[in-house]
Image 1 (cartoon, helix red, strand yellow):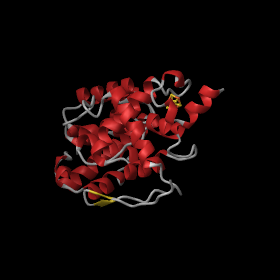
Image 2 (cartoon, rainbow, N blue to C red):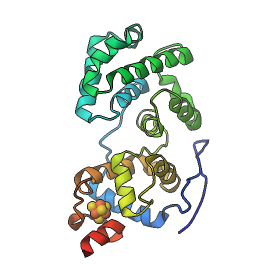
Image 3 (cartoon, rainbow, N blue to C red):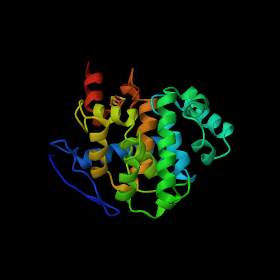
Image 4 (cartoon, protein in one colour):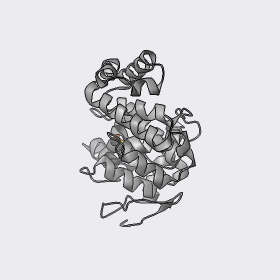
Length: 246
Ligand code: SF4
């Protein structure tokens, strides 16, 4: 069961998983196969963006600590109030904050958006991240994670969905299912889980597996009350076996 490896993905050497034992790959893949038969997102993913990655990056910054509805409302309002990214860059931070207030933490998020736009313009000469599509995975990941307010999950979302590069974002649903099934200890942080799962899951399955785990977390393995009695991976899940035995 114990295994420590460092793998290469598209020229990017990933960080070594900080856990002493990596999840058992055979067990994890069996679970992913069952989740794919249940949610089918490897065959037909419900999310696939082709926008400029900058649009998605700003949307992801807005999504922090709020739900999808508030994020979408804030993003639409921002794009309606300002002509383009240049117009936003020229605005006062408080005007940006006013436009995105439905997403919460609006002053902080407005400051981050301004700083991101400034960095993008300085780096690329235009307010677009399209040129990143020519970069390799590690360069793109490093650049994104150095932007204000962009952590491993946000960077992984932009890499996976917009740049079509291998990355495995771990949100609250993916983290919860991973801990309950027993792939990682309960104390493992989302960042640690991301590093470990990127080493175990084949990169060509990242997108669908990520979406299947989110569907599973939203619909069956819910935060408050997991429905273990109707879960298709209950036989393989540590928490499920405990819950069904009690
Ligand atoms: S068996 Fe229960 S705890 Fe385990 S994944 Fe399924 S719903 Fe979640």
